[in-house]
Length: 147
Ligand code: DHK
Image (cartoon, rainbow, N blue to C red; front, top):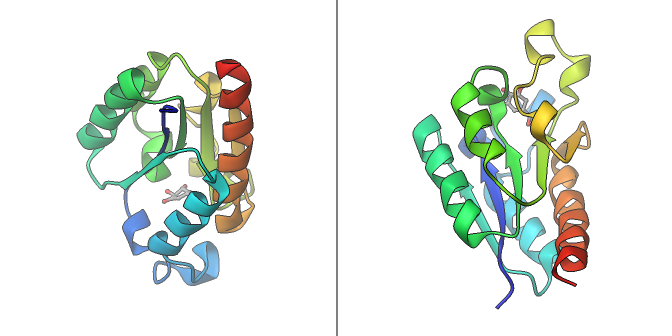
């Protein structure tokens, strides 16, 4: 069985759809999950969200053993968590850092990411459609790696 792509979401993304819709849109996280499952076609995915830093780190550890690739929207932890960065450094496969908004067009506090220096790619500013786009690209990458 093909190893799953892990899609991990950080703090406050459980409120997607009602959280600052003028910035993050009206699509809910459950709808984003459905978009990702469709984009993944036969590839299994693990789709999770947590407001707890340690839980995201535990899931990265799980992906080290079980996953083919990681797509992560660390949300605010992007700019604060060296612990999450250190966990991601141990992951042997491709890592996509994903943001719904273009963080580089926002206030300076959103400009320095701890994840970007270790990510294979960064997707920011496509809105929620960045998720299925990331899944499609990741699927092609890991399929190539699996030969
Ligand atoms: C989501 C958040 O929660 C913010 O803390 C980030 C990111 C941006 C997003 O665009 O998906 O800065």
